[in-house]
Image 1: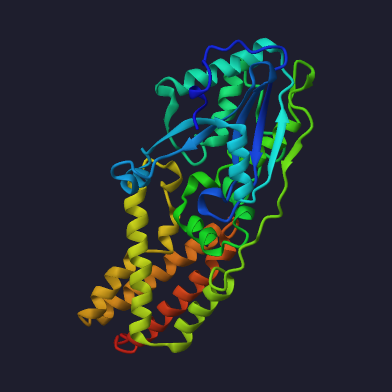
Image 2: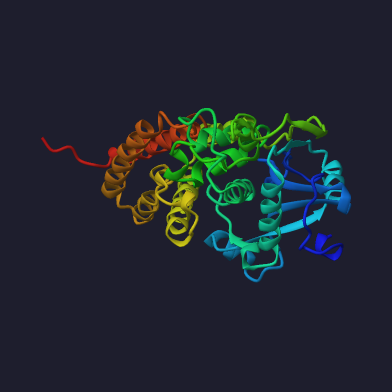
Length: 363
């Protein structure tokens, strides 16, 4: 329910007004894996208790999937009553934490006015970016803008990469972790110097000073739930390793080529997305060295019984994989892609052995 149906947006907050940052716990749905950030505005004199959220989107948007993939899907800000907000997170069994901002009345009014301006202007809509423009970064930017300086910055470890920061959030969601590991490119290997996740903001707020005082008060628990860890019998390491092991143990030419076809087609998809999408996280995806379209050429040679070309193409791809393995050895996703790397190497070696026997040795 939009708060505009209940009162005028031109309210002058009283001395009783409070403004807080809300941090919402993680869930098991893809949209909730990283938590959520919102801003709460209270004023008992005006019977006002409203929560502002960035990051809403409409599934009914024409060409929704294409726009999401392209990276130009318009997200928007909304406002709801606090009671509705809390009820929603109670239903989802997700914790909610509150940090009240220790700022003066004029600064509270400025934040309130800027929030309302956002909702009543074109600023309500924005183009979502996974790292640079999301529900958390938008809150940080709005508060900093309202306070007139870059008050809130990331505190703590600035050497860890974005990819490493994300990994713990996928507990119990193995294939989501694998998927993001292979579709994300070089941007997520940069040092995570920008606040982009809700609990990073929560931690940084607790360490931020403003005008020689703490910017935020002690975190209060509004809702507390133990997160239910996903224990799916399919979404885990075991099925991943069993499937790859079966491919190797069965040692069938048709299965090997089916596996390589899948890897090659994924590589083509990654390349296309890197050029098509405006999501910088998908650009310069070096994982195409593992999911290499070159294996599709290899398969074409095999279909036409060009054994010499198959052999040479296999050797080329093995060299590429070895280079890839060395390159990602220090990356956060090395362990999770290692089974794929080893499986592909073994299959390629098998193909090389099958075709090497047909190549005459000239002395």
